[in-house]
Structure formats: C-alpha cells, structure tokens
Image (cartoon, rainbow, N blue to C red; front, side):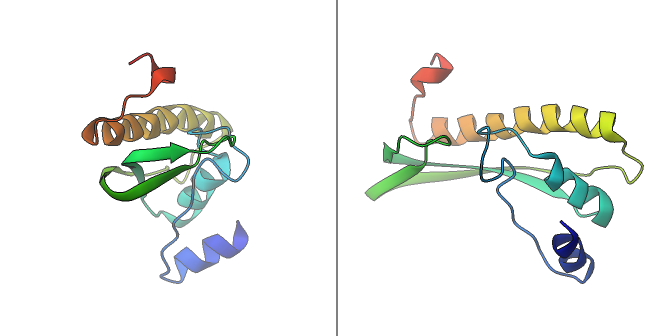
Length: 121
C-alpha cells in the first residue's frame, strides 16, 4: 500500500482490481479505500461484459470473450474517501461501493444481453 500511495502522490495513476486477488468477488478490499483516503485520489468503478463468453470455474468466474462478439464498459464515479474516515466509515464504504460495483457489472451484462442465472434474472 505504501508504494501505491507514493506512486499516486507523485502524479501516477493506479488501477486496481478492488476485490483483490483472493476475493470475494465484487467486494472491495479495504486497502483500495485506504489508498484513496491517504492520497485524495478519486475512485471510479468499472463494469465490463462481453458476449458470447466462456466463464472459467474460478473464485471470481473469469470471463473470456469469444472473437467477433459484443462488449460493454460501464463507469460510475468519482467517489472520494474522506481523509478523516475511520475504520467504521471505511467498512460502510466497502459495503456501499461494493454494491455500486455489482450494479455497474450487471448494467454492463445487460448491455450485451447477458443474463446471470445466479442473479435470478
């Protein structure tokens, strides 16, 4: 996290998979919010979908788009983490932003005509 904070404070841009390498899927890791808190950098959430798609049997259900398919990207933000955010506020932001991340992913899915059976659609 220290290296990421230094990078952003020095003018760099940081793009992270906010649910981290271990998941759970679409739940933002608090470390991403700590970086935003300490740097003042905005958070943008991005949902990406493709169709047709193959879904791998991994914890995060990695999706591989087929050639000549359709794709969509949906953005939401910017969101800011207050510099005085305590652990309780960070926890609330994790819940709120995770819900928003799920929403942008479902919107991207809808744009390419993908229906997620797990979402009850």
